[in-house]
Image 1: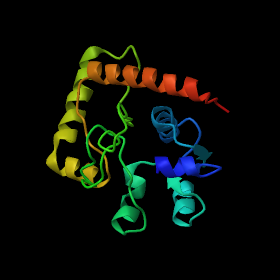
Image 2 (image 1 turned 90 degrees about the horizontal axis):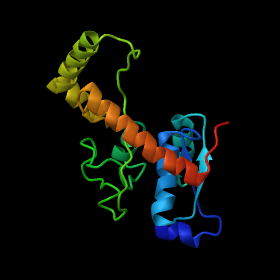
Image 3 (image 1 turned 180 degrees about the horizontal axis):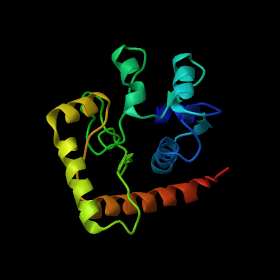
Length: 182
């Protein structure tokens, strides 16, 4: 894909769910790491981008596994790589970008439970304990895995550090790509 993009006069277009989101940042990071000739096409949601990909309007989409897995399994799409550090359990045959030769390329989307800053620690700890218990349940983990989501139960401090690390990394990509909020 990288080599092909460099042979196309206009490059290759890649669709995402919108400007400035994780998929857009991932596409820009890929450009920064490997130099492909890619042009971002922001959609008003991942569904519209997927429709255009399936219809042949655009050649690539950067999206969450959950939005693509049914089409990959049906043979309608080819998954190039996943941006997580490990392969997605729902698509074990799809390599990571690192396995595909793109060094230092890990982009994760995270979902977390947040509370106001002044929430008493006892309440934060209780919420964390209950949430982690749910995320460790084998049935829940299996359901999330089928959706392409890997649960990563942790404490509030680790989650805070992970968010801060990712926001710092993503800010550097946004600055280098000159992504502006509209």
